[in-house]
Image (cartoon, rainbow, N blue to C red; front, side, top):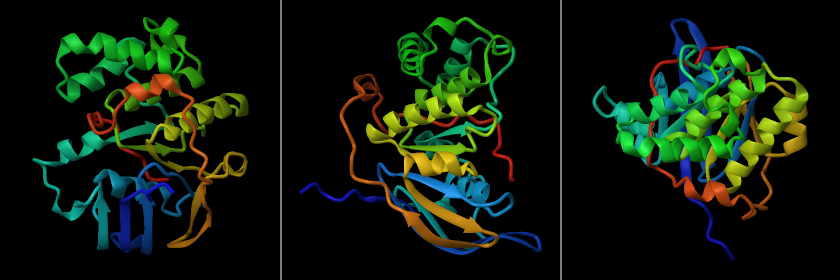
Length: 258
């Protein structure tokens, strides 16, 4: 019998208010290492607030958020960048640098975390191969499709070797076929041990992929709708080279509240 995975993210009675507006009220849930969890709910329900809390971009008004054993209320300007080295973020609107090539967009994340430049080429080439963008390495964003741009965003998130990947409506600007391809890639990455938290309102994707679902409706978390089956497979050898816990989330784009 396999040992149960430890809790990686813990929300304990979390309330988050912005002035008089309550974004989340008394939310409690755990996410275990290696889980793939959908956060669903209508616009304005608090999905993005949950991601912001995990990222340490905002702090709870009440309650406690712990990630990898760390109480995020104890973060300060000095240790926040180090904490964010555990997290990669994929944005709905890509947040790529328009004046940089695909290769450079990924490499800039490595510069932010302080990886020595001689190590960039091997890492970037491996990640671009993993997400299917090797031939587009020297392309600029204006030369890419929406699906390719989203894969650049994913490549940048993966390049820093995160323990956790936060995805904020990553399929929102994609057609179904392209979105489905991105989800297949995320699923393969998850099967190699990455913890993925994905905010989405796309119920077709939720229904197809049958992961654990935490639904937020207005102010308060509702019950978990489903659990991910224990069916992880060892079928993505390339991803095994991406070991957990080496990297950092490049600062810059903030996650926008829905």
